[in-house]
Amino acid sequence: MKLLITGGAGFIGSNLVEKLIEKTENEIIIIDNLSGGRKEFIEPFLDKIKFHKVDLLNNADKYFSGVEEVWHLAANPNVKDSSPETFFKDLKITKNVLESCKRNKVKRILFTSSSTVYGESKINTPENCETKPISFYGATKLACESLISTYCSLYKIQGFIFRLANIIGKNSTHGVIYDFVQKLLKNEEELEILGDGTQTKSYLSVEDCINGMLIARDKSENLINIFNLGNKDWINVKEIAEIVVEEMLVGGLIKERPKFKFTGGVEGGRGWKGDVKEMLLDISKLEKLGFRPKYNSKESVRKSVKETIHNKIITV
Image (cartoon, rainbow, N blue to C red):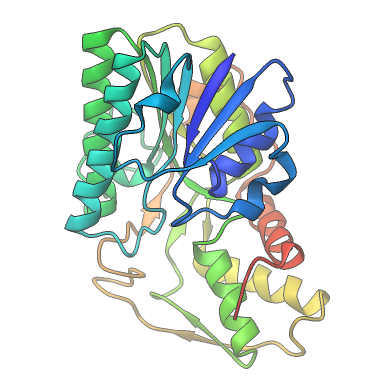
């Protein structure tokens, strides 16, 4: 099968490539402008894939020729730094991708959305819960979802929308774990923690994330599919900080336990304006197809910390 991955040199994208090349019959094309991704993440696979440095704000039609399946992962990865400008940019990129899918008769598109589309919803949030994003990041993802659903309905493209919890692991260059490690490498005496430390969310290893997406793809025959993808438990930011400190002490990267400095956050202890303080997704819909996370939230965090430390992708 001929597949195309937008944002394929990024965090989730590079891990997806590593999984997809296990099937040697797959022909994989990666499109990435490397604004967030890194070519070094896909360096080991360059003899097995085709990589094109392309800005999807421009026409990329020629790369979609003969493609059966598109994984649309290209987007701003930073939840905190989203803005109205990012909203319109990511929406235009998604529209361009969908137009290329339509013109080239692509059979299937898979999109990584986010739990932030729900905003502050009830815990154990199901897919049919009302969507009320409280950040531009969440609003952007929801708008892209709507565009994808429309194109899939009009042009009979099978669509998969995955509302992701906090995905962590190898090649991650953003997020709380990456930030904590980076801060402690700069100053091992004090660790600044955004908010009050009680922000509690579900964390899923990127390995489990990719397995979940592939299970959905392989087992659902519906035209338009929306799946929550996360863990069944959660962990708070202070607990994550403790795990990071433990692993960095064991690894000899810091010599003593740092003092935790909580910023207090905004609006009741949020890490930043627009941060959803508590999130736990109902994943029973995907479980019915056979999805079972290999690692719980705490195990995923510890695994991700070790990978972040040992892969040495952080620069200070």
